[in-house]
Length: 98
Image 1: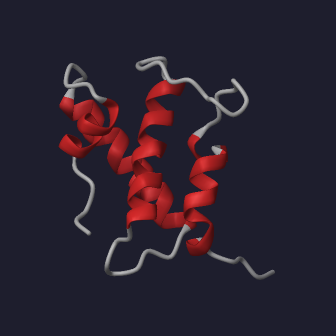
Image 2 (image 1 turned 135 degrees about the horizontal axis):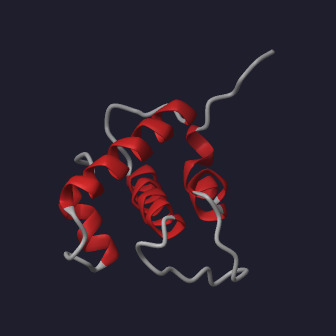
C-alpha cells in the first residue's frame, strides 16, 4: 500500500478547505509519532494506514480545526490514546524492555 498523502487526508476528512501546508505538517508529525511507536513493515498495511489517517484527524480535532464525534464515549482523545488508533496499531507496537 502506498504512503499516505495530503490528498488522502483530505479524502478521509471529506474536506478540501484546510491549508495543505498545515495538513502536511500534521501528517508528517503523526507519521513520525506512529513510526516511533510501531514497527512499520516495508509494505505499509491497510490498518496502519487507517490509524495514521485517524491520528491526523484527531490531531486536527484537538486543535479545534475539525469537528469529530467519538461514537463510543463522546470523549475526545489525543491521537496516541485514541482507542481505535491503539486497536489498529496494536499488532505493530514496539515492545520496550527495561
